Image 1: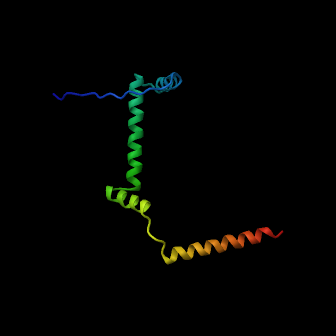
Image 2: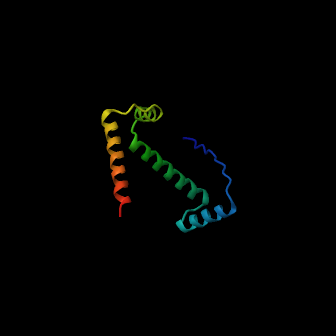
Image 3: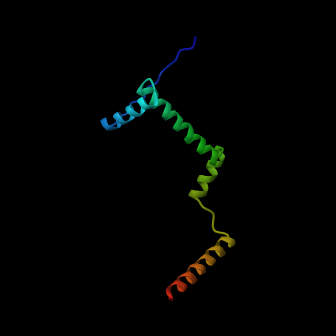
Length: 100
């Protein structure tokens, strides 16, 4: 027979927060406040992990992404040209708007 080991998390919240959470727990039909909290925290943790893995599937993907943020590559010719085109567009837009 497997032994269940329960771990513990201690959290301090205001009285108002506790009353709000307790009320939501009662409205949801949970047997206890702890059951409500564990259910929703676990659901939120699973969603965060799912969202994270949807965008960056592997650890290698995450490493590549972070490396690009920390050490971005130099802009290539196409990006430089796009910047110049944008600046020209903004300049023509401003000069066009300044005349009534």
